[in-house]
Amino acid sequence: MQPSNWNLMKPIDLARSAGVSPQAVRDYEAQGLLPPALRSPSGYRVYEQRRMDAPHAFLLLVRAVGYRLARPIMMAITKGDIDDALTHLDAAHASLTQDREALGRLEKVLASAAADRPAEATTDPLTIGELARKLGVTPTTLRSWEKAGALTPRRHPTGSREYQPKDVRDAHLVHMLRRGHVPLPHIVTALEQIHYSGNLDEALAQVQGWSARVNHQSRHLLAASARIEAVVVREDPATLGPGNV
Image 1 (cartoon, rainbow, N blue to C red):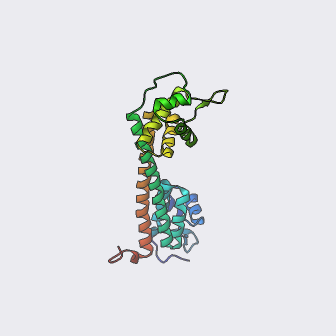
Image 2: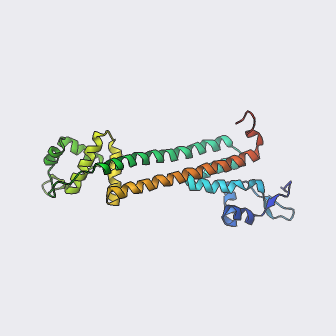
Image 3: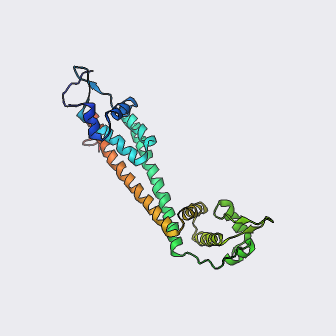
């Protein structure tokens, strides 16, 4: 098929515009992520400039939600299946929303723990009965926390549980957060983060960094949506206009 107009770009021009290699442009086209190239009278591959938004949209989508979610969106756009593209785009927004909500819950847990961190009153290990009395709970409650993964006491050669100072600290933290009706799975996630980073303040800072990253991803998704809209409107200007907004 020969182009009907000469407002065209070579593959290298499209690649430079998107900040990728010409081979990447060819790969995207082969995967159905870009509209097929046209052919000049001399047989060279050329792209209409109105196609310029497509690779930009794809790259922004990848930065926002990764290749797995970006690919079906662009494939649907290339096929002209706008309903399918919007369905996948909604799924991408939902994925980021879930990440944002989970991080928000974790940040609240860590912030609460950092504001009311318990002192370690002993350096000697405690038995399950001693720890239960210290917290004012039952041994059954401690065993339920352990089953959920919130506590990991050592086992004495006799089989009894031994709670080291770090276990006592974790138990105090679990107790405090449970009083605040924080679900055990959220507490377990918070404790894992605390153990990974070494202290509450570092854990909280890391979670806040993750939240900032999700914000960047959302900005990329917003920019990608604008590029996608430009692609769709150029393909079918009737998709937007009076009465279609």
